[in-house]
Length: 289
Image (cartoon, rainbow, N blue to C red; front, side, top):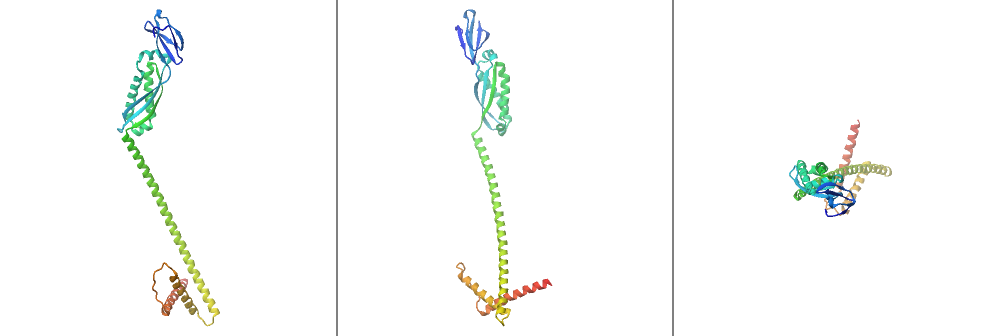
């Protein structure tokens, strides 16, 4: 570039001008003339655009898990200190990468893997503070640092997924057990309610039968003279006995049933029922007294 007489510096750049090999000044964006006879020349042009550098760092955490961290560093040349950036550092990317390695490997081993995922912003801030302090002296400004990705070892990721799946299965089992418990409780409550209602229905049925028998006995005794209540009761019980036998014969689900049959057996059944009713009535009278 020392042989050029005129140079145009772009909008996003800054030129470094030398005289007889020594730094003279910075050339702002625009068209510039140089006098080679006086030793003036353009040593170089630096871009002031923001540049991005991706750095992949491999390290291990406090719980001995090896991870890879992908850091994205955005930096630019400070326009006013372009001469420092031009003369001090030959390869700024390698310098930035070295400091990123140093800071990350100093912070991450003090954190567990879970803490690293939760506090990755702290690691990025630590890297930013260190790079700003160091690279600022060389004419570079660190704009942003992003911890783009945290990649654990494949075996560790598989184990973490299995742990997560096991926890979800355990939670599902708890919910399933609670649901089964609720179903059993509701079923027991329904059975108890059904038995209660069944008992109420049987009691009402028996009460209705008793009231009907009493009314039939009274009507028969009034309409047919000379009959006693005992004779009417025997007649009603015999009728009920034959109705029961008829129901047993009509039911297709019943097997063969052997029952005693004959006038004597019917009379015995009637006497047993009548005696039971009389004993119950006597007990009620004694309790009332």
